[in-house]
Image (cartoon, rainbow over all chains, first blue to last red; front, side):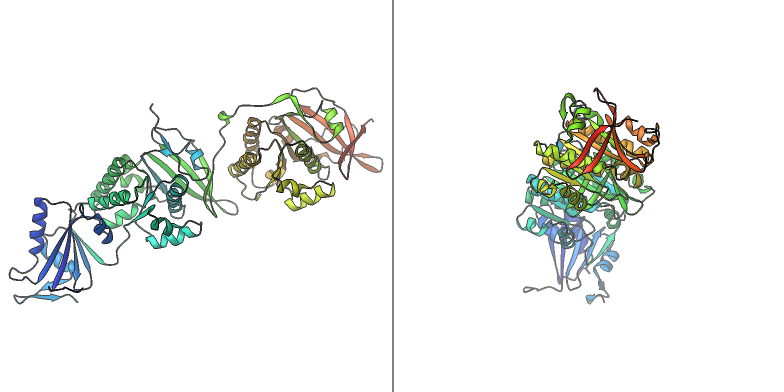
Length: 103
Length: 483
């Protein structure tokens, strides 16, 4: 990964570009503390990129993949459940100073 | 009822059971317990489509990884890797991913899987899709409604893309999970069930078409094997499809001039003759002579060889000066053999049908019926088998001998020549058009051999008893036997 500039890199697979997609993006951003910006989220539309969905073996949407840091983790389903998303992706945020990787 | 267009699977024997194939553009569910051959059937459905019909395919795999499938099918000589490289085959890999996946709640959109299938179908312009197997969906999705929804969406997509598909599902012996899945209403345009049961010495595989919406198929269990090159299904020969082609005017020479005379010119074409006699009376010789005579007259023959090894028959024939090995090489003669333990009617018939088709045979010798009985078939099964076989042979106008070991004929005393003709043989008599009896008779210090034509349907024949000897060159029919 050459041009990695952020601390966290996430991918999110969605179906189509709808207002629901915007809700999902908002929910995903919401897992990070409000003042934390050291992350990147790539949005992939399955309808436009079924080949990528095949590569990542996506079963359902929304699916969020934490690409970096390793290990790769996937979460599928209700993103509004912030705690479960964080645990699923192996991310913990303790206090206001920022993120801590899962062990 | 409007009949749907059939779509041949290309799997040996299966399309005959399905009377042409599965409904085009529809889905057929393949069910069975673990180890019954579902995956092989689906793999072959794909492979035959590509290689026989130039129909590209998509294989959706839930359990086995694509690279494992490639290895597994290689034992049948199927090279999936090459098909993928040449864009004839595409996998949709739905096997569990190595990364940890957490499901949260049960509210998700399952259409991405459908989109992946759609994408793969478009990519290779597939006409066939196989999905192996949907049980894994239940492991993948905790929520049953999601499974039903994904199946429904897949079905809709497959129909919309006009692809023909086979979908496998594992069932337990008690079949309790079938209705539990509740998928019948959308998936099943047809159901093929695979079963495995224990025979006396080996496992016997059965296939059963439970349903084939909007089209006809043959009901009942048929046997199949998973052989070196994949599935071989042994379809039953339906009796109602058979028209009789026998002619009393056309006679087939027995190869023995005197026997031809006694029978009024030989065996009527399409007749089947039961050759009944004790061990050593010359049933095999009579059969070999009949086959040889046919071949010399330009009629190919089939020799069903269950009594002794083919090599031994060939050696015996050579002793008479008949080169059966040469006939075989020239495609005028075909031997059929089978194991007598767990002998399968369907398979044996299938072998006979194939052999007849292969060389256009006009004569057949079955040596012998009694070896079927000494195997694992009971008398009724043998009778059923004979009915099916004779119906088929008649439909092709094939004249045949069925040898039958009749142990009771030895040492018949004066006036008792026919007394010992066994009742089981008499029961077979209704199936046969004629009976030639070979028997031993004690006369003084000697045992002599006697032949008589006991029955010959639709023909006037000599009812006398003749002495005969087995010499080099075959049976030598002698004088009338007078007491």
